View 1 (cartoon, rainbow, N blue to C red):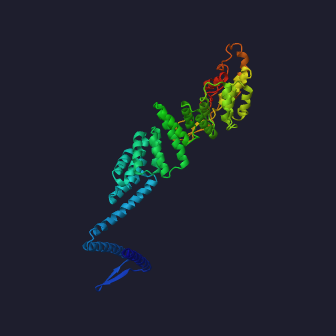
View 2: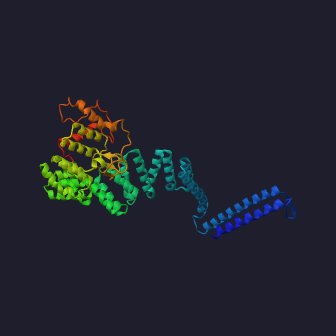
View 3: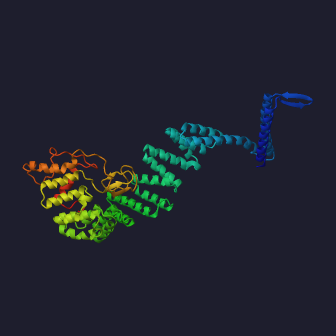
Length: 511
């Protein structure tokens, strides 16, 4: 410390002396006269400057020799590493300077320069655990995956950098689409650092994609244990995994285990609709109908859903329409103003052929929330009340361009799924499906599509004589334009869904 302070003071003194000398030379017209041993030497301004530079170099060499002499004296006194530290100090300075420049180049996106600086730093420092990190990232930035993989494998060989190497290889395999190898690497990285949140999320996602529900539940528990997941979110996702595990057991034919797992999943998260439906069916299979009713009522209180109504109908599959309407009152009385409750009541009254009550149950949904299901129910009501075919066809034509209503939609990528799954089929996100109305399509309908109900009515008189089967509900494609469907709908889809409502008013969801 004292020696460093002395060098700083000496450097400042030299700079001050040079400044004063330069000022003196600029003011003098001659040079410098030096008398040594009775001999007088006269130096001009240029010669004086050269002499000053030589003096600086001489002082620098003298300082180096002094530090070397001090290191030698320490070595003689028993410090065996004094001389090696003297020579290493300069190399470390150059090495760390190159390392800093490499990090700066890497942050600036200059991969080639970063790699060159990393190689220079490694030459001076001989610390590959530092320089290999820059080299690997620079190689990835340049698209040299082979070089990056080679460096990551070197990092795996050292205990202090093993996690970094495994994580780097895992990300490379993920980018290449090799999820099997990436899963093994994620498990290894998780074993090294179980608290690392990114590794936890990656491992959980890969386990869910590979249907390793048991392993995914252990990973989820580790996330909760280490504080990376709130307790309520953990409870919900653990129920999702338990439900997925139950489905897997059911596929294997082990029905008792599947029933127990489904019931356990429902207890963990009663508002999880698929778990409630499966748990209720498990109780129905075991003859415990009261338990099924209790589960479905609790889930309906959280969120009314067609799957819950379908499971409720399975409790008494052979009852009459009037008896079913009466039994469903314990379900529909829970949230009577909810949209799904009103639709369910309308379908139940259609099955009982009480068309005025079905219309009252439906209310103003045809004006406020017109979707395919609502408009098909209206068409069935019109048919039941004796309306003309033109009116019925008009409602069905409106259903062609109507949205499909609430569906299972991924909150991450907005992909629509036909049924609930724990992992999105498109973006592979875990537990992102929710029952909601998807965003409306921006597709422009063909010109005149909004006039389709009127067109259908106008051609009714022309086709009435040729219609021998009054139950046929298919619009003549040669007489009416074929509008471009919205949300991947087709006229066949609407016809297929609408006709059962007319002939068998209670939909599959309510059965």
